[in-house]
Image: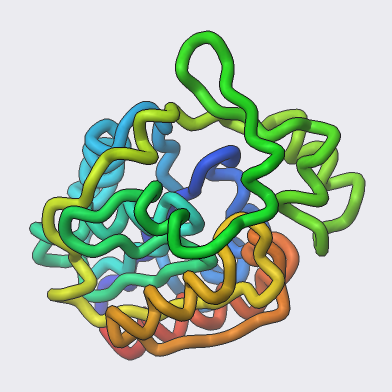
Length: 229
């Protein structure tokens, strides 16, 4: 029997693996073997190590999909993994060699970042009262309030961590551009997707495209698995 293709999902900042909960069943219905990584959001090195651990557990070809900062993680984690056959960026960062999140944020104003607050231990949070407006304006309001309550903070140092060698130079890539994203401006998303030569799908979505448009996100990932696998 031909082994199933694998999909490893990597969440971004201020979320966890459950942010993919609407996408996962759609991918499973497509016959894909799906795993969502829980990254600690403590440093790029820590998050890449957690992702590479999960990649190593897969049997057969694997597609990596990253949302938001998870795009940076798959960019670094997928470089030396022979069985990683493609990368899918979902409203995500795709840094180049020597580039950080801070460098990419400097390209265009991101209005949602005005609501980010530091704590005394070096982590960043989104003001819960502004979470929906900043991060998830097209998500059901009740769910957006839940996302605000369960948000997972990111270490501020990560915004300065740099990519050593981008996997997208070696692997085929796909990119979902969120046109009304307030965390990563669509202009910056289009710049990154064009730079890496990705196959692009544009969706009128907030930063939480995997929650507000799970069908389109799942189809893009499934298409990538079919094309690359």
